[in-house]
Length: 231
Image (cartoon, rainbow, N blue to C red; front, side, top):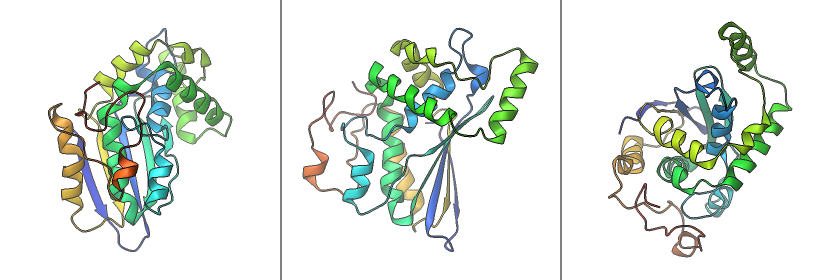
């Protein structure tokens, strides 16, 4: 399905970091919608599941695992989300990431975009990273308004964001880097989570470490049994 995966095991640390990277950045923003790449990054970082309608943190809490929202980094030509979990939380985290690839496009709505814009604004209030400062300087060379935070982006039509997600933020061209105290058999876990994203005929696996009552909670827009990519 085009997803590039790399694994580096380090048994000396207690956690695992997972980087999800897309070769898309602020220089790729349409002229009429500056800030779109950053907005989509924050949509991707939202803390809920897209086909079950549940809170991601609650899924981890049910499994006795601490969870925090990913760190978001967007520069001129790259978007990166960095998740960090304890080693025993990696199988569930990989499920969460795969679930985003499979459902985020169809589940997106204006409320989600608005929440992402708020998160984007809050993040902008903190000190910019060196990479962001370089990205902003680069924009003056290319004559683009890169690195600015134009919150009119919150009014971008849902259809435009969906189109970008479907074409530029799919597994094709994306990369997944897993570094840290990975469990034995990580390759088979990755295959089980991400191989189904090849097509819409494969049913979604339910989250690991959860009982049936948690897996079948009410969902406002889809059934947990719908295939990837289905609406």
